[in-house]
Length: 492
Image 1 (spheres, rainbow, N blue to C red):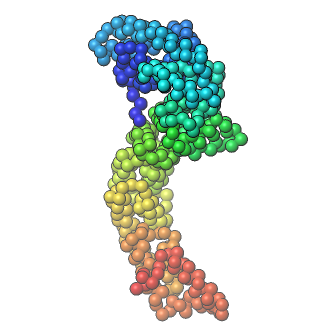
Image 2 (image 1 turned 45 degrees about the vertical axis):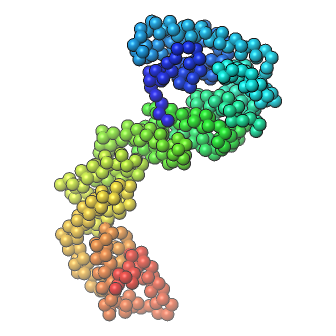
Image 3 (image 1 turned 30 degrees about the vertical axis):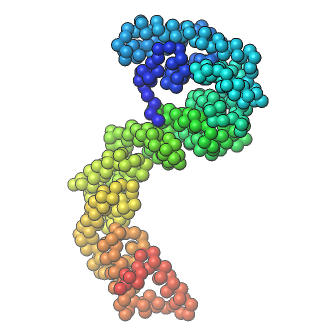
């Protein structure tokens, strides 16, 4: 569901007679252009078009009526190739025709009244006796009269839901469905029904829950009974217009510049990611797919190159920069990950990368762990497979360079005199994730095994152990080998 710009919607609502005012595009346009007036009077576009008192109030608020006519007339006149003045005159003629158009409905309202006990029979009587042109006008006028003294959105919704009956056919229930949908479509009305919220993301989650018929308020004691009833209705397929209205409200919330959670860059991306996961609970055919575009649009606004660069520069080192980028990649879609990939590639290909990465430590083991930690983070990241492989290979080359420059394995052999110490050190380093997964880690494991295969290893390892202590040491060794990833296959 894509929300059209007002000018485009005005073109779709173009009509030659007053009957065009009652078509869906006109209802949508009235809902947008007259939103302040509608909210002030707590009414829907349907009630405005079908009750003389609301029309009288709008006529009294001349600036509202004139501004609406002017705005629509400009868009439609341009599309028609007509003068704006002429189109405004035609609009006034159509507005003047609304009253006479409701005359027969007003006469009907004197003898027919809608109540929870009479609604089914009243609808069927109107359907049986009115012409196709008058049928909807008559039923909607009767409903507008029924709702007239309901002063809140909650009261209106309560009254409409009270009219539902298992005896209603789908073409009869649609009158209720459309009106309930008009209420739910209005964000002000939905906010009044669901109560206050801490962040826009919270309201989005609640709207998705409502759409699925799974709404549970944060404060169970504060739930409005009418909302619980509405939630129950939406578990069925009998209220299609209302379900579409919930989607439209979600669309409206997404298509704003209001932060979902925070103005903080990363916090907002996390919130967008959570919202995306929530939307995926909705079946694509039911309306989730069109909303994804708006989510990705939000990501694009939040993840602009300038904002990303500024946030990355705030990180204290290269390791932290890459980890930040990988975290961001978890919260964005594929179309936005290319920016992340390019940034990671830029950092890794920098000639000063190794110098910057190791700026805070000259300890070889710490350097190896830094590289191995980044390697694992990249392999497990949300980047595409090709980028993961390319970046992982670059870090493997870097670790190989460190191992070669420091003669790391030879240094261990020289550092410790006893075979058990050499083996134990390598097992410890493997368990701590010092080496990049793959050939480097495997080289360290095999070297450790080669030490343990020497005849002096076991006597040294068990030296001084008596009785049960020998078994305890063997069990401890087995656990250490498991932690280091050393098994029979390694020893083979």
